[in-house]
Image: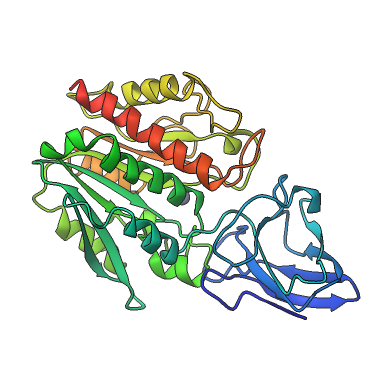
Length: 365
Ligand SMILES: [Zn+2]
């Protein structure tokens, strides 16, 4: 039997195997505080009943582990495996040679590459390279449309926040399919992997030392990405900036999506609240059992409030304060769900609703 995180996005430290009990822990790597991302596979455990016990904090969400047979197609089908916040069990069938387990639903560059194939032939869509990462990976940039007004979406400033990527997929396909009417007036610039090295290496990324990618919007940034986005947007008039994240692991506020509002521009102070109201209305029109619900009254965090401090050198604050963007904020998509676990489909649908709310907001401007 082999247990490892030795693949794209993998992250595990195997501590011991004693009979049917496996002790392990997430690797924090360059992260300066406790965090919870892990992603590993088990090979050659056919017919075994194993219990996996994490040794560094509660990192198994109440829906159990995300599971996959191929390391690509993931779901929260492991609820019956759940034992506690620190452990889960799994019974391998006689034919189950390999199984993947993770904290949430991973999303790697391979997912994006395959998704991109579905829109690549659209003449409005162009894939470029923003710059190269510290480990010489391409940081992709997708441009859609040819309008003079610009909308920027970024994702994975914190590399482990993978559910946000599935939402972004839904949003991008919605631009092309449902809201192409915008593309004469607007250009969308989408950066799906800010910290692509962290995404592919399987890092935590949050609070990465000496500071993480979403604290690099300073005078002399340390990351190639930040220098490149400064150059790329230097003379660009920007209407909207949205940064896609995931919050803390689970529980309370972190079980429901929420918005971290940016500083409000003097000339359009209400605009991001209009967006939030539109999103609430769209989500709650006729929700299905698996619809990812959004409650704009309960969960949104205003600039200057808790977890949204004034003066933080984050992307949304940079674009709001330095680039005079009409509407700049962060959308937090939780890792696993609330009453029902998230699926790839429900996350994509959530992303489409975000785009519908944005359309409704800017179409009336
Ligand atoms: Zn984040």
